[in-house]
Image 1 (cartoon, rainbow over the protein chains, first blue to last red):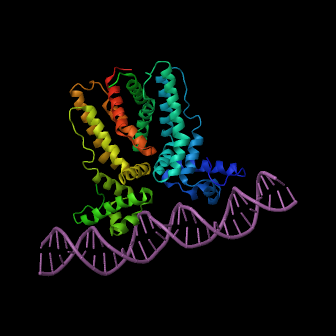
Image 2: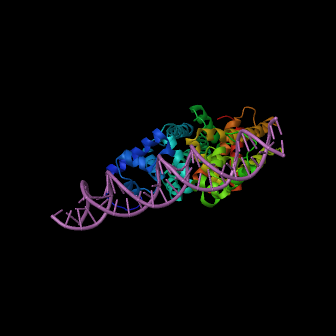
Image 3: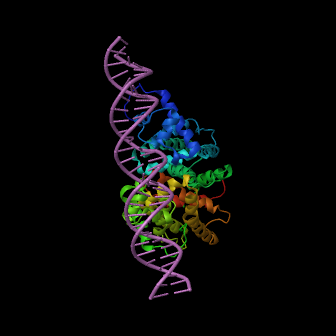
Length: 196
Length: 196
DNA sequence: CGGAAACGGAACGTACCGTGTCGTGTCGTT
DNA sequence: AACGACACGACACGGTACGTTCCGTTTCCG
């Protein structure tokens, strides 16, 4: 998570203040107008302290976002694969719909294309684990015979998350529950139906 | 397309030089490191001229991207809906895979969240027309009985484009032809199969 | 208790922003 | 053919945020 000097001397107090200030500023003025200097000022911290532990603004907000994501959208297993997928997708959609998380995540995504380290961190810490969880839940349904054995589970996950990302980056109004239910139903149908 | 002073006196020569320089700079140093000043210098143009016609860097690159998009991914109708969708999605994927278009589009997307006018322009000029085209092609297949009458065509388009955007913003390696074929097959299956 | 290291604060030069001014050139109008 | 309007290139401006450096202080480990 952290990056450089590797020490237990690090001030947890400052770390929390920085992450908190970063999210707060993101709420009130938007990701693009958040600056390292403003974060430092709001957190009562010197810029040097931020630069010591994070390489960029994106890295600060990625850590803040990841921290805040803890049990935001848990992956339950009630036995009903449809209901569980709906619950999970709805959790992700809802999280992205409230400031500062929607704008913060969009801002982080926007920096991936010129920051290789950040892209790697995001995939390793956020995306891949969640994809694995989703595949695991689908496989569990597969074991119960709710999904055919040969189904392409990774593709299924992309078909679920894809429209969520599509809508998020294009800033179309977030989907309501019915849209999510329809999406999940379509994906399950695509897995279940006979080959094309 | 253009914005402010509305005149026929505008120098087409300068306009072309600016759009060309913007894309070139995007190729060689990445969207995030392209500046208005650098575009002006590379195009042999004063900053004032750029600010006279475009409100932001994003607007310049949106126009450059849109111009370059002409017949990049045509929407054909061979009668085979599966083949046509594969062709179309492959065109979009291929376009995004080559510099400067991939990075340029990602950069434009990144600015949508703090630039309402740009977001509106992108949707009106780029996204909505293409979505309409896609829906039109699906409807044509519907008329021929290849897709059931009640199918949710807008959702189908999102299921097609969604994974493309998902992969693009997360910078996962672009899909190959087989992945695209599988995706298209799944979407068509989801439309075709009986209700869940 | 001593030293190493993280800390806050302040200042630095650099880069780019968006705007303003000015003189030049070019294109419509009459 | 001459005028006048307007886009043009150039240059300079104040402002903001960058990332770094220095310094003196505080905090924690051994």
